[in-house]
Length: 157
Figure 1: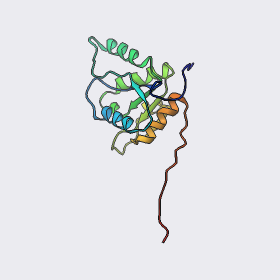
Figure 2: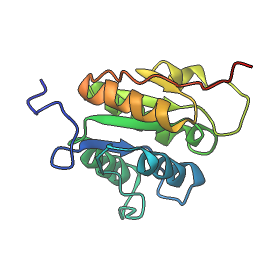
Figure 3: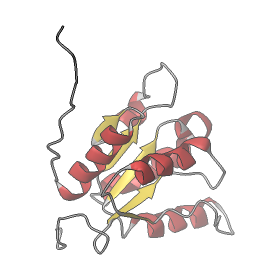
Figure 4: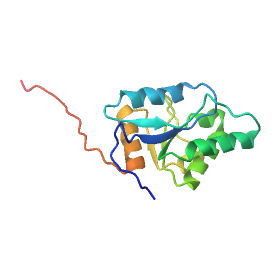
């Protein structure tokens, strides 16, 4: 099913889609802050929230299908469920039907559970943490395990 080299590089970036509703959203922009701050992580974004298609709901859905078709992984913003549950659910269902893995991000700064309706459509759920997000995207898109360890420094007196 996957016929591309697995190593992430500038010449072979991970192709991703971030769920959206064609409206400016802090969480959408925050994802890119996290991705950009990761070292040696290359990606190409296929989502186009700034180009709302003309037409009805079906025209919007067709546009979303075109955005999702070439990608390797979907980053789902669970916060979108609060304002656009039908639209987010469509994007996640289409991703699942297209055999595209979904990394779902919990709501930013909120101590609430991810709704079961979308939780069941995710392959992996992560907190808002740059390293957790990037590692999950690498795992889901390229089956690449990171072998990073935290280093804790302490002094013995």
